[in-house]
Length: 402
Length: 170
Image (cartoon, rainbow over all chains, first blue to last red; front, side):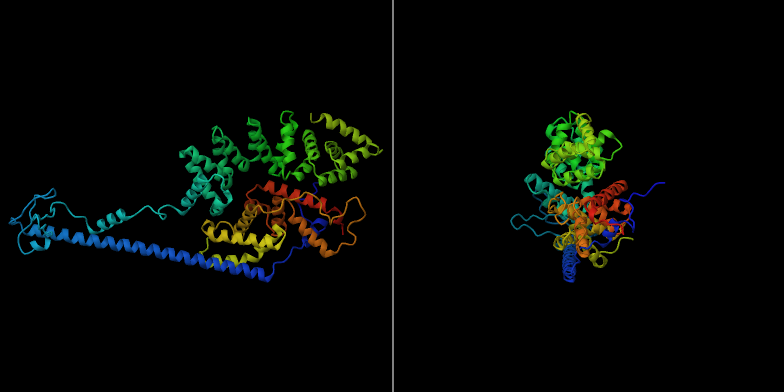
């Protein structure tokens, strides 16, 4: 019969769950809640006002453009229509028409009482009058409005989506100043990572090399597992290899990271990827990392990275002391032993005392050069209950992981 | 829940979930001041990113995701020092639970939870104090359910080891 794992299944009888239930954090004061509510309302009001003003400004601008377009169309259309009407009605030859200039037309102005209304003001020096072209059909009113609006429309912030604009601004900021603080530049984009990631991936294929470098940096912060295939492809390009590897360190799953370690030629980048594996701080990534502790050719690099890791996966390593794979248990023990961490040594000593994975704990202590571990192992060698275990651990420490 | 109307509904939802969000932030950060800053940052992102809320997730889940993202982005959290706190006695000594007051133990417990590695902390708090299921936690944190279970296991195992002297069977 399977007993439930006490570390997965809460139980009212479990002392840990009793403590967890009564854990007491400081309560937020009423002033704090009121302060945050007030800040929120102020921000909402400000956003609301800004959006309303923006809508109003947009509406006023659109209305102005339409009115101006309609007026100009109306005026020019009215003149054209009257000319056509007059020419159709009165086909009598025009008297005293002087034609000169490059734009003079062959058609003539009709005579009659309307002639003065439609004739353009004469050039007093030359006496030239320009006649309207009566042959082409003037555009209808709605067509004229559309043409005028299209002519006057300018590419503006409104024609691009706001997201595209923000993204372009971020790319431009990083291009201008590659050493700028990326977090500050990315702040406006952080709420909609998926959307920006999609845009970046879409634009990557047609971007220049310099632009790709910036896009990769942005993907490193905004991207997800979806970006991994594209980044792997980019990493094959010599100029993009290092930044793509950096981004993959942040985004790739542990199996991919393990593959990258195996394929990586550069010592520095290999260590970087190993560090990324360690930094995941989960069982799968740690187990994959331990494969590199087990191999003689990668063991030194793997242990070096562990030594300088700011936050090594201590819990995962302790958990893997219980692995069904003997080599993995030994690799975990070696890794734990190499950590210069008093709390880890404390735990290992407790495990030896209480006979919890005693062999593995001793292997770990034998790999530790600290004073506490050395003293304890020395005492253990002279302890009748522990001497056999220590000797066995010494053999395993020497041969299990070469 | 379908996508609510902006402004008025957003305001109502934020007001409704603000107290629980603040408590969640206090558990994550371990202190009120940091929690206040975290919630401020989160609310700023809510007001800017409202259009990104698609409505298929509960508002609380979406809001908590923003809080967790802001928590990760702050990077002002002091590096976790992997040592036993001085107020926990030596496990090899006499019964260390003698003399500790009940309230102190409850506060100590809270401090240890807030001092867990970030991912373990998030999973434990969401499942133990926010009553989320593993599936909900996996969706919120964008990790697999198996990872949720493994992380919870590690968190509880760690607490069990660190607080061994205080885990007295009743």
